[in-house]
Image (cartoon, rainbow, N blue to C red; front, top):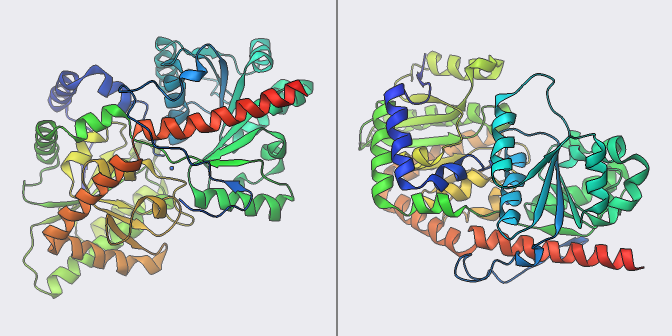
Length: 466
């Protein structure tokens, strides 16, 4: 079987956590609220509300300061370690930071106690976010009283009829619907029949916004509301680690030691939950092909490794077994490392040399791991699909390849290109970091969200006055 790191062994885990605590307690908090998880001039019905990028938060008043003392209800279909809920939590904390009264509802919870939900709810409670029952009268009262209601993901739409019932028309004019999905099975009237009547929708990338615009019209016969495209940004805490050369060096050495790889080895990593849609299978096929190309051309290179961060053997998925069987069949166990899924991605970003973003079909809605990798000055090898095309500048900050089987050989060749051209690899990483600093920081995202909230609040007030 391929080498499998089951996280940090006990002594390593204690050492790393102690080190991160020395960096800052807030850094750990940021790791636990990160997501997955994203400019065109076309108008259509999709409105790109451009705002000045502004000054970093901390050097000037927060662009969200106008939300002070307002009441906001955040509705999420689940509370988990996936991108959507964690991103909504991040918005909750940004709003709490300016004095907004924030309430949270999770529409679907398991009947049994869940340690993840318990932990995340207490993180919110510690930051002053009120956690409400999903179907109690308090949730209805809060929705009616709130200045703004944010529905997170398309699935949350079912909550409107199930809980609010006859009160739905009174709440819709102050709803901002934050959509992250890119899959066709979310286009159901049960989920989104109220979408045309809300104050606005917010989507993480232009390509996703256009997809929703077309699919809702063609498949469901409904029209999208005014739509705002908001690219995401890296947290200040992650940037602190990314810009701390000492921290990065120590983390790099420690992770590489835990994986059993040498300082000079080259690491290509994919950091996503293991699933067919994230393309780990095609990445491994490309990686194997790149090893063959290097051997055929008799290139003298450092030893290369593929790292799959996001493993979960406790789930016993057929797909993960397929990945491991492929590694075993091709006899590349010494080159491939499976690492358990984790929210503490910074140590791995510090340890690797290239990020592979290989999401398939329509790609990622945004793909936050991409801008996080660029913050660590890593070049990105990504699929030419979804939000990745709005982040990665092909040939400048990374290299793009087609989705599907057609992308296997191009990705393999791109792996060899970056393995053989050290200067190109480093230059792409520096350019990616510069791009992050110019448009993908927390204060950039806060400015973009602030512009949307102002518009939605204005529309809501106009409706109530009419």
